Image (cartoon, rainbow, N blue to C red; front, side):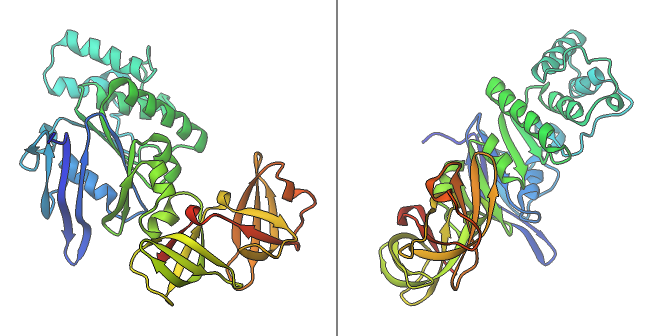
Length: 359
């Protein structure tokens, strides 16, 4: 069996009566881009700080190429780190900031000059060696921080919400640059964010954190198409949840009674739910079709709002006895012709596109 490049084994972190991280376990392959995704307080940053050596775990271990890192101080782990705040030295030039990790490692001057030049080229800041941080934009400063973290070729690069202080356009530009740098260098990246779109753009795999634990690990398409828990279903992508009742269970599939009397069979079932119990049905907005004036849909409701969003149209439909449901149709969909708020529409969807979770 091949030894994992980086292993997190049963990590826990307890602060008094509060358990911030609970038994976090995962393996990360060499060269992988792994993102820790979750809301504030879910344990993702604490796990990253334990990896960096800034905090000690209450229990568990961190193994790099089979060797524990816990007894190694943070400054000797040879792990790169990029923070939300750029943490550049304001009194040092760009070149001096990037050179700092090499100088404390006492690398020869010629090597320092070559590596600084290569690192700045990698982040597309050639010729900025003499610029002071105060005279640079936020995006440029974050590129300098990235160059400084990569200049000594660390085996692992940790990034904690590095783009959250940037505006949307600039954030997307730097996301592209981070992805490009990862592809060019092959460095293993562990990235923390609360932004699901950012995680989907960047990651090979995503670990979804909730209340100090990992709910699910998978690629973006895996998490979106087959969420393991209701939390993951609601956190990854846009989602509707409809209260239903279990009519029958066949292995890992269920027959559900919908509000208004509709029945749907063969819905993937998650968790231990029995007949006559309530279940929460996940419906993705783009997986629902509408038919105007059709009372034969699985759900029937009144159109409350229609919003033009460019290449798609958002329709808000209120079924009887259920919360309003978001539907997203492509621009030019035939049902949209003449559709207006107040109209009655039927909603149809496939069982295999939906998921049922214990309420």
